[in-house]
Length: 575
Image (cartoon, rainbow, N blue to C red; front, side):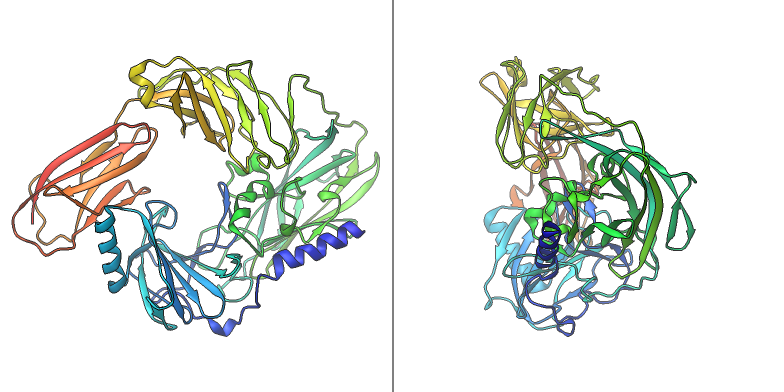
């Protein structure tokens, strides 16, 4: 009982008290002239991170005015081809910081300074930091305009609030700062059960057993089977769930999931907030093997050894359910969204006679989360695994696997090496070094590749030196060495010699076969000019910032991929 109480108290401290209590009257809505619909909520599980804010729809358009939600000053302006793209940070006088992501442009005076900095640094991506005296703002002042920059799949505003001192992210819907229209209850899609055994101190997970779920009435779910679920002496449940909001077809993450057995609460997951160092722990909160390919949230109703306590305000025996042979237990799972709508699933389990017993792997090394380790395949492929890389103790050994058949753009130069299964998440990167002979002409074009959970070959990275290919990566599964000799593809989105006198921008389509764009530079009349990259759309854009001179201009775009292949395109336009 002491363990449960201490975790409960710690969970409240870690999750509920996020700095000072927010005053709902401090804030106004961050964007003007929108319908007020949403496409993502706080804490949703994304590949390798929790979603740090909310996404506000901009009605399919760019250029909506963004306003300071409270008095303060602009403390940071960030430009990147990835992540939030163009982003602006406002340090507010009330102790929080507002973040606006995926902007089309900043307001004119800020845009002017950003443009000057880009030219002086000859940099397409950078950070600018400011003190309180440079860009003070009052509540309601326009600071920029919404867009589709960075890793964005459509026009929207990513908006978040952080505690300025701790940088802890706030669940602004749950706390009432943003109030969506939402009377729709979460959906419970499917239930899974996994029996657990312990071998040499390592938790071993049995075969996933899955059960279909049906909705009886809104918010009330049951299993399609009429008989109790047979369970082992010790195991845990996994639930697939999602949420909806009025007026949109998007799906959302849930705020809370709980599990009770015979009326006694055993487990609760709750998304009240987090700091960025905990964001990757979504891979431990979720049931990662299913979350990799699911469109729902797949939440593990049990706590892995290194999953942070602050996500679990209620926890008993890490969420494991013990059931004796022949014992019958009544289970209840609740899923609640951040607007207070609750759904539940009730079902019965009974203890079965047969029990899962794990088998030892005498060739494997035991990885402990708190200890660094080196795993080897003879002298051919050592893998260095730092302390804190894995979320629970597990067995590990490197294995040879057959490499995939090459496509027409890659040369496969080694067999595959498997350190950990592709369904094993890593919190910290491991370093793999594989000795291999690579012809000299290919050495600067080599990289590790991986076969992901969907069977596709993806770029991992690494460098070849001193007879070995080495990479530091969080990618698990089958890794192998490839050579990529194909340069990026550049396609101008204007005709040669086109009259662009009335155009406001110069656009190119750029793609790559494998490793992706690493660096790029655009020149007009031999002089460097800034260029914005939109990776989702595959476009590069230069916005004209000088009046038309009504003459012919030369233009050159140079793009290099991550394997060192360079493409150049040269042409002309009239402006």
